[in-house]
Length: 250
Image (tube, rainbow, N blue to C red; front, side):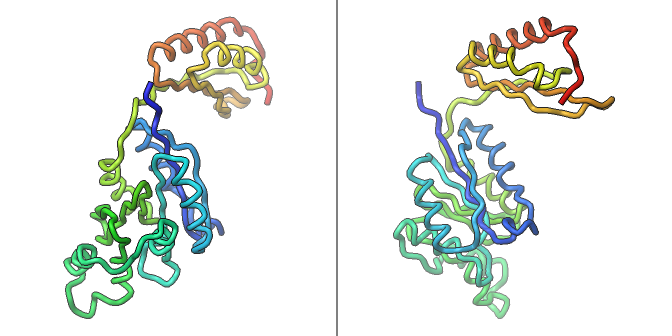
């Protein structure tokens, strides 16, 4: 069986760690990767520091098929992601003609094409550009590392191009079953179902019921559709056997 490709996400920005900005990009990336059969295995949020970016990129690019970064490729002094990624991968970086042409087409060759804006044309040697149809300034792919914008609308738009640059695997199948019982009631029988179906990931997610009290949503996921169907049948059997159990509690 072919090994499933994996990915990691690095969210770069002091504003995320301070709580001033909410990270929306990891969720968007996770959904895209799920659609193409790539497992997002981990996500890190780090500050705008060269050492931190270099360490994270080098730690993750060797143990995952793909690494995605968001943030730090704009025109200001603290936008250092491009240089840090180039340093991590020991690659020269500078203003590249193709990236500069994209910015010149947007701002013209006059005074609006400032030195600050030209910072967004810094691309490592050998990198492939990632289209940015929203604001123009491109991201790039260097090796297995994708460097993309932090603004959610721009990140999502770049992702449309980035998904054409990855090789996915088998799609994940999933299903959800609403359940009236709290996790304290479900714990033992649900554990038994999970143990009996090791190729299916089975989880329980608490939800507050409209009338009060707690129920859960059971979620099962697998790349094996037949195995998922058998697990679904086992979950329904489990719920039938629990009929009459208390539906209130934690």
